[in-house]
Length: 126
Image 1 (tube, helix red, strand yellow):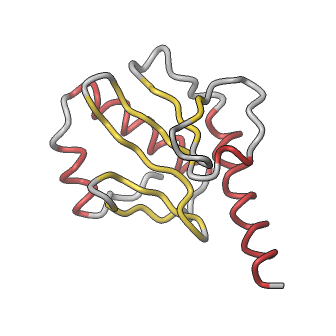
Image 2 (cartoon, helix red, strand yellow):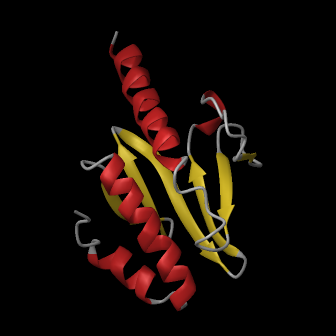
């Protein structure tokens, strides 16, 4: 079950066009099904999702929804769907429409990102 978005995130989503809202809602469905305990907040004026630390973000614009993985450079990308970002660690994908989005591949990447956050946390505690 998808939880209600925090009010700031709900306002962000409500301000999007219908097609962008559809993509964001589908992403949220995949995300919360994959990682039910993930934390959702509005940071830097965009939705950010955290598991131990920041995991990913959404940035919606005219060209579509950008899903950014905060530490994506440390992850495997077997489907080759993510692009490098200007920053060293971030990897992202532009989701432009419901049919073209790799919905079936995203759970793998979200789970891997969560595991990476857990491993990194354990290493920093030693």
